[in-house]
Image: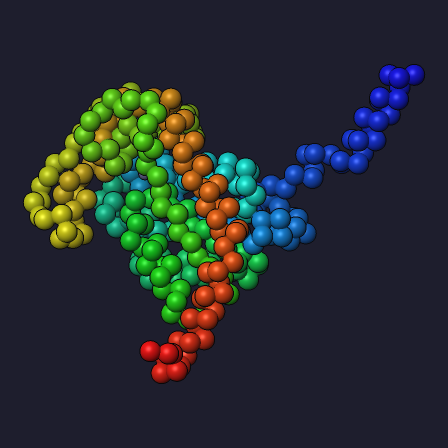
Length: 291
Ligand SMILES: [Zn+2]
C-alpha cells in the first residue's frame, strides 16, 4: 500500500513538474521556437550574449575557428548556469594582420562596424536590451571598446557591454613554457583541448616557431599596425606542444566564471540605460547643461 502510494505521489510530482527536457529552454537563439524565444527573453531579463570569434590561422596545430570555438564553448556553458540567450556563430571582426595566411576571412572595417551595429540593433528589436559581447579574439581588442563607445553617438534603447577575453587565470597547474604566450601557445592549445579536443594536433605544434622575432624595435607606447607581423609572422605565439588538458580545464573554468559574473552584472544593472537616456536627452541641447 505504502509502495503504491509513493508511486502515485511520484507520478503526480512528475506530472506537475512536466517533462524536464521540454521545460528547460535552450540557450541557443537558433534552437528556440518563436514562442519559446519570447519566454527566453523574459527569463534572461533581456540579457543576450554575442560571443565573438574569428577565422584565422592558429599555429600549425589548431583549427582556423579556434577563437570562435572556445568563446562559444565558454559562453554556452556560462549561459546554462545563469540564463541568457546566445546569438549564433559570429566571426566578422578585425583580422587584417592574418591576410597572408590561408583561411583568413577579413571583412572591411566598414562592414565590421555596420554589421555589428545592425546585429545589435536587431537583437535589441527582439528584446535583447542588455547585450554582452564576449570577445574571443585578440585582434578585436580595439574594435569592440570603440564600437561600444560609439553607441553614445545617437540614442539606443539598449546597453552594449564588452567582456574582454581571458587568456589564462593566475594559479592553477604550473605552465611549462616561459616565453610570450599570445596565440596558439600553451594556454590556447590547452583551452582547445577542452572545447574541441578532436581538432587539436599537438604533434604538429613544434613544426613552426612561435617565438617572438622582435623585428621592429619601438617604444611600448608607440603603436604601429605591423607590430604583430613583425613579432609573430607565423601567426603563432608561444609553444602549443606543451599544452595539457589540465591547464585548459583551469583556464576554461575561470573564463566561464567571468562570463557568469558578467551576465549577472548586466541583469542587475538598472543604471546604465537610465543614464544613457539622460545623456542622450541632454546632448540634444548642451547649452542647457549646468556648468
Ligand atoms: Zn586565438
